[in-house]
Structures are given as C-alpha cells and as structure tokens.
Image (cartoon, rainbow, N blue to C red; front, side, top):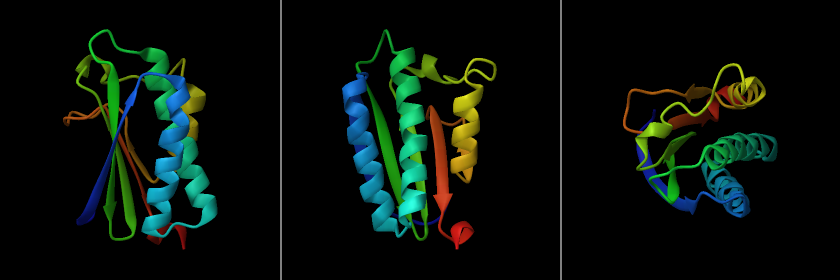
Length: 130
C-alpha cells in the first residue's frame, strides 16, 4: 500500500438498494485517483460483487458495513469492514467461484480472509494499467 493522501468512508446498511451508492462512490474516487473509464468500470464491478455478498450473507449483530476508499499516489485501496467480525471470510471457494474469479481478475491485489482488522481489502494501481 502506498502513502495515504486521503480516506473516504462510506457506511451502508445491509440492503441491496444501496449498492448503487457504493458503485457511484467508487467511480468518483477512482476518477479522482486518475483511472481511465475502463478501469473505473472494473472497480465498480468488484465493489458490487463484495457488497452483494455482504448483503446476501447479512449480519445478526450489525446493521451496516463500511467501505473505506484509501487514496494513495497512483493507487486505490478499498477496505470493507463491519463490527460483526463473524463475517471475516464471506466468500466460499466452492459456492462463490465466479465472484472470486471476477474480483481477482479485476483488481491487482485482494485479501479475502485477512488476519488484519477488516473483512476484505482490494487494491488497484495505475502503474500496472499503463
């Protein structure tokens, strides 16, 4: 992860009607970093995949989840978190094979079951897209 310039945080309820807000926010932040339109679309798809999985999994403890867009020089880190740490590994290699493939193909780095204090993190660098 590169030197952080700004963090943008978005807190959303576990409801499908708010995924479009996550997509819109990710597009705005990715544009700010300097990604081209094709990469912005890729980021939006990856964010949607994670949001939809969080929503379908749900939480008995928390009513919302947080997305942090960490803007670095030429890099965007997207970190998903929730007070309900039982959601730590929401993607199953067997049942979510397509989603896992999509996210891995569209993002440069992904931490699905991190030991760190978040649910999932992914990043995209401009350098790798020139």
